[in-house]
Length: 451
Ligand SMILES: Nc1ncnc2c1ncn2[C@@H]1O[C@H](COP(=O)(O)OP(=O)(O)OP(=O)(O)O)[C@@H](O)[C@H]1O
Ligand SMILES: [Mg+2]
Image (cartoon, rainbow, N blue to C red; front, side):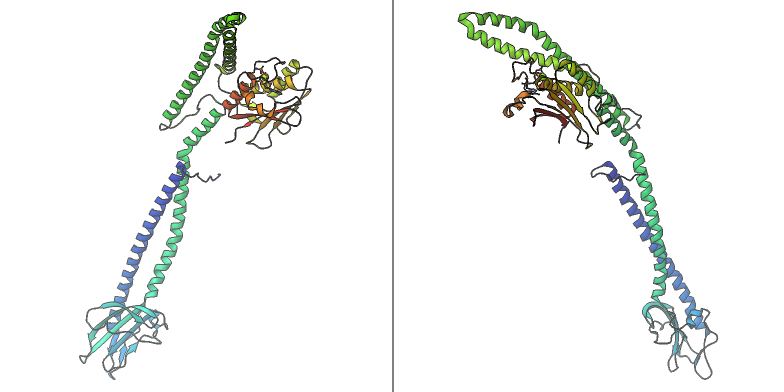
């Protein structure tokens, strides 16, 4: 499975952060409560054990006839016999030599704690560091006070708790990893319909489908349905608008022809020649606009969105054949190395129209050679350039060439609509059309629009 790093601001990142926080809080809560409960239990059983030991010590202690303190038998726990084991006991009485466990090869225990018949405990300094100390006092045969003290190093208790926390860390780390992994799995499972939706959207935008396809869960199904309805409505609206623009242009033609006729008549009369000329000029401009709108409407009206996109360089073959018939004295060359089978995600009909317009211009103005060059080396930067060996366009006028009706060479037939239509179509496809004077003649390039 490929692990994707969620993008900043994405839903996935939000969920991931929420899950991580939740897991961390949960683990911290388990940690604190488990360590707390365990420590309490261990301490409790420790203390119970020490109490038993100090009682046992009291029970085993006797004063021998010679007045020394003796034990009738060793304490049952062998750790009191092991030198510096951390387990110590001590019996003292006024005027007698103290008796200490074999483990106490050095030091002594504080007997302050052992001044009451009640068993008391406290943390004291022992022979090998801080020790939990238990003690009580009992009267001896002669009425003297005998002090019993038992101590166990605090580190014994700490060692137990440490080893528990080490185990707990390993176990909780495993649990956290498992919880996070399931969290990630749940997130990607939950968000999969959204991924499918965005893939369906991408297919729609690339023209592979005509609407959002696929089944979606109840929460996003209405969104997909609404989007589809919106897309259909939009399509219908655009188609209607195009048809209307076409119709309007068409309707204006006859009145305009009458006006032109009338203007020509006026221009022929001496007293209103100037007015007639102005009318004629304006009528001409209107006719150009009308022709342009009609051509635009024809190029896109009522057409379905794109099919599979444009396949390079196949799209150029039929156009080149047509151009060779249209301009038989010119030589067309196709250079499409590295492009075989590349698909441009744009409307093939619009793209073909742009190619036709540019190739027709090149055919009209080239001296002899025209090259169509496709470049596909970088996936994001496919381009097609049409190069001719004609006169080119004076640099200062290149931008004007895109205006409706602009023509620089009135000896060659045409209406000045090709370039503006080509640029319009390119814009609609997200492409950029540029003209430049190259080393041989004009170079017209179409490439993805730069952001
Ligand atoms: N390859 C070219 N070489 C030199 N001049 C060009 C070239 N392409 C276009 N032009 C100039 O730009 C003008 C506008 O071109 P455009 O394609 O818009 O109109 P047209 O070719 O004259 O007419 P239409 O394309 O509508 O039949 C042309 O009239 C011509 O003067
Ligand atoms: Mg043209």
